[in-house]
Length: 112
Length: 114
Image (cartoon, rainbow over all chains, first blue to last red; front, top):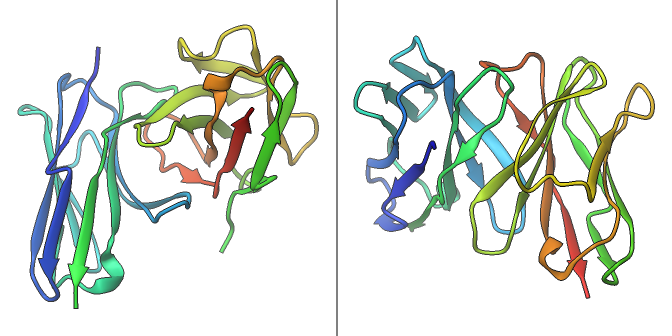
């Protein structure tokens, strides 16, 4: 059974710092991995999607990497800003039905 | 920019009552999903739906749950007889294709069962 874990559960950094959020999964047979952002009481905003054949994806200050063999993905945020404060969720797609299995998230606080 | 919408934003119901949560997926998307998030817990997959059929459902999605695409735009989740433990945020999502395609989520409906 696929399990997704995110470490750390919470992170507080000063503005401008580069940071890395970690996601690990137990079964390397995945279709894709998607990173989301969730603001308090709100829905999920898709940040990046990495297909199983890809190693990384970039969007602006965000870069996500995928290492299927080790069951890991990282989300790198460059030059963090207070507006980046949110919970970041990692989700793994194990098959072709679109089902996503989520981690518990990392809550990020960027202090001005 | 196209987005997934959900109504209502908050639904309060009494235990044992039926509720219908509504979603309007992005117009050119063909695959639809429901997830839920109990307060403080992980987002959990409920069901995926394509071509008027369920593609996959989780253990949570028992006989009390059903989904329907009643017309060309709406996608609904029905809970026949709500229980206290059904209280959660329910998210609808859609994607162009399945498997490897990006999913777009709606803002959620907060269901409170009293």
